[in-house]
Length: 168
Image (cartoon, one colour):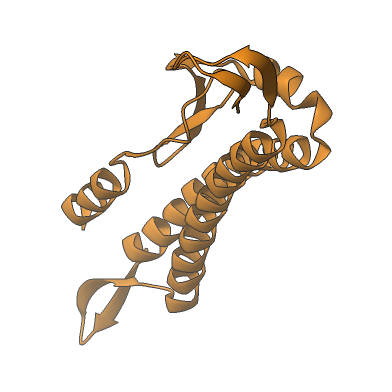
């Protein structure tokens, strides 16, 4: 049981990278099991800096803050579920006396085990939803921070012709 749990946690701890479009003010994310980190030009940003960048985007701020609140709740729920499930599997030692012979045995509570499994699953779901909210906050910020700059010039173009020259 212990080896299976460790293997399960190692599989979940594998990281995946989700990069956003590169740009001067674009943000990107790197996501792992417990947290999503936000980068700008491959430099890790502190959450306070991220919130300052999000000041003009209330939806991105709301998603980021909600994700930050849900992460510790998810971790606590996961740990509590694992503990409750482990306690149920460990069981309560009892003894029965049959014909003068004492037989030790354990009583295991199936309802407690189910609650532990559900608590662990709920905690992992909260952690993943927290990570999704942070990734979505970056997507919202990147989509609202893009500004189309239209530069129109009249004169000689780079190909040495006379006329309008635009770049955007």
